Amino acid sequence: MQDYRALRIHRGDDNDFSVAVESVPASTLPDGDILVRVHYSDLNYKDALGAIGKPGVSRNFPHTPGIDAAGEVVSDSTNQYRPGDRVLISGYDFGMNTPGGLAQYCRVPLQWVCPCPPQLDLPEAMIFGTAGLTAAMCLDKLARLQHKAISDTRLLVSGASGGVGSLATAMAAKLGFQVIAMSGKTQAHDSLRALGATEVISSAEWLEANKKALLKPQWDCAIDTLGGDALFNIIKATEREGAVAACGLASGADFAATVYPFILRGVALLGVDSAEQANDYKRKLWLHLATDLKPASLRSMCEEITLEQVPDVLASMRAGRSRGRYLVRVD
Ligand SMILES: NC(=O)c1ccc[n+]([C@@H]2O[C@H](COP(=O)([O-])OP(=O)(O)OC[C@H]3O[C@@H](n4cnc5c(N)ncnc54)[C@H](OP(=O)(O)O)[C@@H]3O)[C@@H](O)[C@H]2O)c1
Image 1: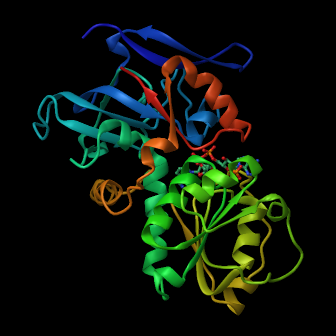
Image 2 (image 1 turned 45 degrees about the vertical axis):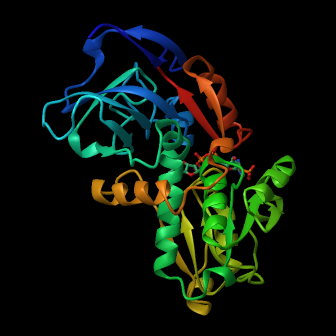
Image 3 (image 1 turned 135 degrees about the vertical axis):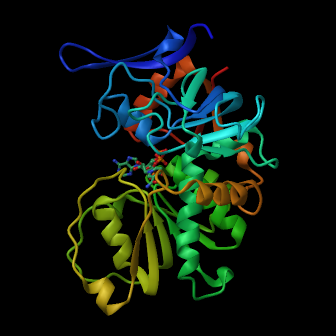
């Protein structure tokens, strides 16, 4: 194998960070079971944080980001896959301290690899990516506490114009929920209705801490990508015996809380971490994404970009200006 193209993040002498596409030697690939030629990747908020050197994402520089990849097996020392098999890699340490998917090649352990379901092509798989797996896992966790018919259930999605939010909106609408999409972008309201939201509300009044112990119940369950005080406001406005799946921190990591929504309304707070889930569970989620959760509008939910365009899009993600999913054509 010769040099290959990769997006690389460099740390400068002043602890500043630069991102550019480079040709890198094959020796930069780590040891591992499976060598994959990457055709598509995508962008997630974690990549945006990694590009400015957030230590929770990567501490090794230069670093190849990209927490998702879809491609074809080149070689597999475990003989589980054959050359040419279509595979998906998401989460674990991929694109963190291990070189990731925004590169023509990656090498990973067997346990990080899932077969791509036949119902999905590689671009579709990366329109979903980690965002789709996370939205699917939120829906799965909420379903375990579901006590009303889906068609009678009001489900709130916050950060609805973002990657996780837009997929959660479309997938929940496909399942038959009454989806209330919460967004800070008035210009996204029409597209959220087109994805299947029955109601769209502004996030503005939900972001600041509110002194009231409880708020008027407005939804039965919620998928929250914002975190911070918005998360606790959403919990306080959840119906009796409802549940909130918390998966993000786009608005903040900290929030002040009381026990009232939990002990007076029985609301459940469900944490969601898609990255570290067992390979078997990820395979099940991929199969759901490929079948019952796949929105008819999936192809229209992304903007396709090249590796060279990635640095600008990561900056707009950090500024909260991005919309929907970004599919990165790598090869
Ligand atoms: N737990 C997990 O396994 C997991 C997996 C994937 C992602 N995540 C997390 O989920 C969150 C969403 O990820 P993503 O990839 O969907 O990101 P994204 O595409 O950047 O979407 C985030 C959305 O949140 C809203 N937002 C952004 N900044 C905000 C701010 N300062 N205040 C209020 N709203 C803001 C915006 O939506 P509106 O303008 O429509 O409100 C934005 O589109 C991130 O925090 C990410 O780290 C977690």
